[in-house]
Every structure is written in C-alpha cells, then in structure tokens.
Amino acid sequence: MISYTMPVILFLIDTSASMNQRSHLGTTYLDIAKGAVETFLKLRSRDPASRGDRYMLVSFEDASVGIKAGWKDSHATLMTELRTLQAVGLTTFGQSLRIAFDLLNLNRLVSGIDNYGQGRNPFFLEPAVIVAITDGSKLTSTSGVQDELHLPLTTPLPGSELTKEPFRWDQRLFSLVLRIPGYASLEPELLGGVPPDASPITPMCEVTGGRSYSVFSQRMLNQCLESLVQKIHSGVVINFEKTGPDPPEDVSMEVKSGPQPWHSCHKLIYVRPNPKTGVPVGHWPIPESFWPDQNSPTLPPRMAHPQVRFCCAEAEPMVVDKVPFDKYELEPSPLTQYILEKKSPLTCWQVFVSNSAKYGDLGQPFGYLKASTALNCVNLFVMPYNYPVVLPLLDDLIKVHKFKPTVKWRQSFENYLKTMPPYYITPLRKALRMMGAPNLLADSMEYGLSYSVVSYLKKLSQQRMQCVCYERE
Image (cartoon, rainbow, N blue to C red; front, side, top):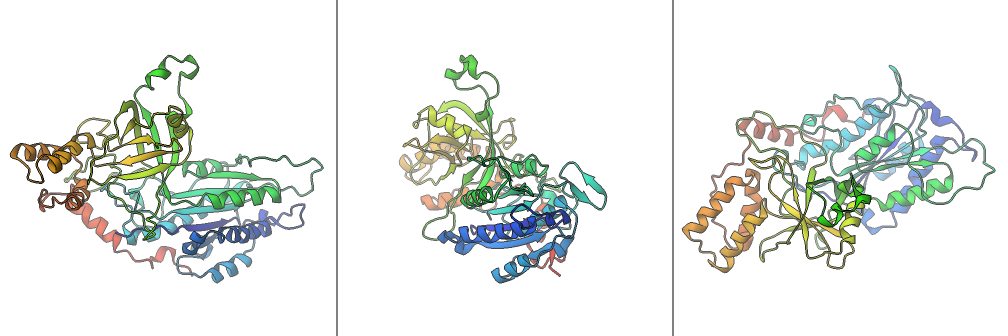
C-alpha cells in the first residue's frame, strides 16, 4: 500500500470561445485565467511544502487532447502549454471535469489507495485540488445548451463503478468564475469576502468540499488566489451527521428547535504527515457502511465521503496505554464551534457508521469527537471498532493478565472478534504486535471478501499508469 501526501493541483481552464471577451482591463478572460495560474504558482512557491507539489493542466478540448500536462510532464511543459492555450471551443465543463477526475484517479488504480471493501484509511491519501477558471457562460456541448452541470456517467477508467461519485474524499473542486465587466465601474468597489457564484458549477464545488468564487475585479481575483493557496491541506472530507437527540441543555431552548447548522457538516479532517518522515502514520480505518459478505461476487459502490454519525450523549474518552489510536483535527465548522462553546474537554461524543456492524442499523462506535484541552480545536479520535468493549479487554490483558490470557479472557476476546468487521484483523494484529502480544489472532482468520472481489481488486491494482484511455497524444 502506498501513502501519498504530496498535493496534486490540477488547473482546469475554460477554453470556450466566450473566453475571448475582453474586460475593462483590456485583456481577454483567457489571458486573465493564464495570469491567475502564474500568480497562484508564485504564491504557492512561498510555502516550503510546495516543493512536493505536482501540477496538471486540462482545457475544455475533447478527451485526451484536453490533457495539456499530466503526471509525467515537467513544470516547463505546463507553462508552455498554458501560454499557448486558445479559446475556440464550447463550454464543455462537465465532460472536461470528468476527464480531470479520471486523470486524478488513474494513479489510484496502481496504488490501491482507496482500499475498497476493507475500511477507509484517512492516512492513505493523495490530496488533490482542482482549480477551475471559467467565465460562467451557458454550458454548451454538441447536443445544445444545458442549464445544469452534468458529468458523463460512463468513463473508460476501470474500477470507477466502485465509487458512486466521480471524485474521491481527498479531492476538492474550487472554481473562479470571472465576472469582470467590459467597462470600468464608477461605483467604488465593496471590500470584504468574495461571494460564491450563482452558476451551475457551484453545487459541484460544494459537494466535493470546495467552493466557488464570483470574481468582479483584479483585486478580488488576487484575494481569491491568496485564499486558495491557504486551502491546500492534507486531509479528507467527511459528512458528519447527528443521530439521536440534542444535548439535554438544548432541548428546552425553543430558539434552537429544529435542524441546526451543526447537525450536519461536510468538512475536512486534517491528516498531517509525520514531521520526521513526511508521511502520515495511522492505525485504524473508518468502517465501511456494509458488513462484508464472502458470498457476494461484487462490492456495493461506496459514497465518496463517509457518512459519520455522532451521538450527543456524553461519554468518557478512552485511551489505553500501549494501544495505538489516531487523532485528526476537524476543519472549523458550525459543529466544531458548537462543541467548543460547550467547554467540556473531559467528555466526548461517540461516532458511528450506519450498517457497519453485522447486526443493528447504527453499528458500533469506532471513535469519538472531543474538544482539545485548550478548547482551540475539535479532534476526531479513531479507535479499534467497538472500542468500549475491546479496550477494557486489552487493558486487562496488559495490567491484570500480564500478556498471559485466561480461558475466560480468550472467550470474551473471541466474542468481540465476531462483532468486529473482518477487515479490522490486519490493524488489530499489528496493534497486538506493537503491544507485545503477537499470537492472539490466528493467521487463518478470513478477511470477509469473496474470491471474485479479491481477484478483481488485484487486477485493478495491476493496471498500469499507461492506461490507453487517458494517454496524452
């Protein structure tokens, strides 16, 4: 398994004929787009972390012709291709965005980074940001004008049917929609934040965890580019959804009745690399939303972003010495703000993935949300599956039994294993080895996937980067 943390930044440039329109600055929209890419690169180069960046360039031209700079191309190639772009085609945003996602996903076939059917590992990620620059004109194709952004459903990329959406949880779309007028306004420019755009592109940005910007001036454009550079994080997007009642003190407050912004948040968790190695280290996956079936010839397609449910019933945070756990900081959101305002760093809210257990809709807790001691951020702690059951067992193994388990302890442990998704065997075996108890799990334990699924996943991982469907001509 390969873990990437070097970000990929893909520039998707609108090369439709309407990009030839001129702003009051005397330059065409396409010229402004080219300048924006160059400015972005200069701003990004200030960060020492940018040394690991990989850049791509895709235009609105057809299929492989639109891939101007890909995985193997140098920075010089990207700049040459950028400067020679011409605005001559249609506004085929959906088709070009599909090509961009497929180009990003091509490498995932080789690395096996998505770990289908075996839990989602936040520490296996390849963070990617797509920066789309367009004029927000009507979406056009050879079949006519479209009111909504539609990505082609079919793709030549093998394995794409395993995820419902064309993007993955570590890929976000940001769109700069140029609205700079052809004449200089006499009104003074309003200062402040840049509003989202009202074009069909905006919902697609938001669903990936990104956003759109409506750009009315060069100053606004520079402000957006500064903001975008700050958004290049190593992280994955998660849907956090409340399950069950609100905390008791809020039930009686009529002002806060009904759905609240913190009940549902669609945000990043930061996956920070190890300072020494530059690679993130983790132990436990986020569970799949199904129980693996050894008789099933296929895997159910997963949603790009895991649906993590949190329960507001106060619980005690659990950590056992020598048992590894993972800690991820949440991107600021209404949810983090609400948790921090409660000022309760000694309690936590358990998290679940529905249908992850063999029985029961909600599944068993795989971790918890907790405010930091300093109350300056909220962290997601990812633990072994059903940690309230297994952690006390492991604590007893260490402190009471001194790694010499009794028959009763083994029986309790075996009962736990029956309730644990089988793909947790590998991380649990690794954790036991780290603890000094390597022989508690039999090597013959099954992983829960059928032979046909395992064979198909192996075949996918053997796909080469030279996949004919997206080679540059």
